[in-house]
View 1 (tube, helix red, strand yellow):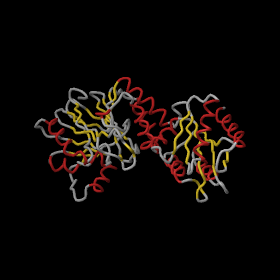
View 2 (cartoon, one colour; view 1 turned 120 degrees about the vertical axis):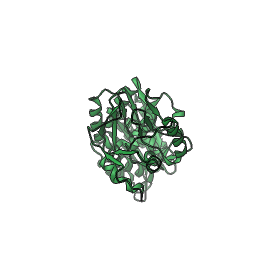
View 3 (cartoon, rainbow, N blue to C red; view 1 turned 120 degrees about the horizontal axis):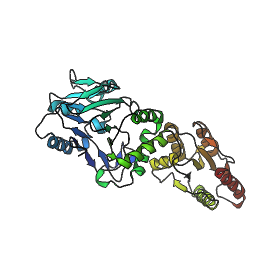
View 4 (cartoon, helix red, strand yellow; view 1 turned 90 degrees about the horizontal axis):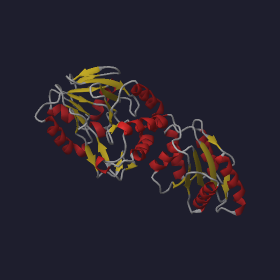
Length: 386
């Protein structure tokens, strides 16, 4: 129960291996859905088709013989909207409530379903009375799809935040460390849209929010709510959250890996408070992206490959490009046995990032790190720590 009249009817998915077919979720995933029990009943989103039967059972139990009046659709992504057609068929009187952009998407997902007379479109500031509860709608376009809305319940001061403030992990596996998997979730799914998140945070600051009900992860109240808003403000401004340096390396035969580990130890000896080293060939890419956003400094170390850079490094920097990565310092270590190309390839990709500075010198390793490489590595370490 969220309150006396707001019930949780969501489900856990502990069998899923990849969320959105790309993010590893060893602790599963929750698909959150809520029911507001009033003179008129509003169901807040459905769930993924993977958990349809379980959700239908939860809905039926919460309805307790009554009929729903509204299905509020905050987000059209299939893990939240898969059962829209089933709702319309099962409950002939139910009215969909969604944005105009969502209306345009309905036929994309539900071919042949007749939505005529079954949809109420809402926009920023519109309200819907359920009796005791009054719902006010908030535009949240591009967090992280264009049709997204959020809903504020003026009565219980609850914000239904769509994918905002969500996290990886099933609720049955929930721990006290909300930020860890919320951070990985935010930067990989919503990270590109910091400007839009800032816009919604400004709207949220103008209302009294006592509870946040996201579409993934735990309901947030009290200190947890305040901390989530604080972190979202930092993250969406693209500001570093913690002191530290990420070293991300791409090594073919171990030479670059050895240089990266050596450089990490050099930084630690020089007083770096936190140094994280990630092997891009083996680390979870989403976690490395999370660390890149978390810390103010990134060192990329990579082998040359086919007159460019080893592919996993290219993939890492490409992920940063598409996530609107910015406001960071970079150091570059390249490796090449005969004609090094990794450095210039990485440099070109980094230069495409907004407000990112490449710290000199760029260090070139020839196959294996040697004592003659030490002075430039020391110089790079000093310059990064200034």
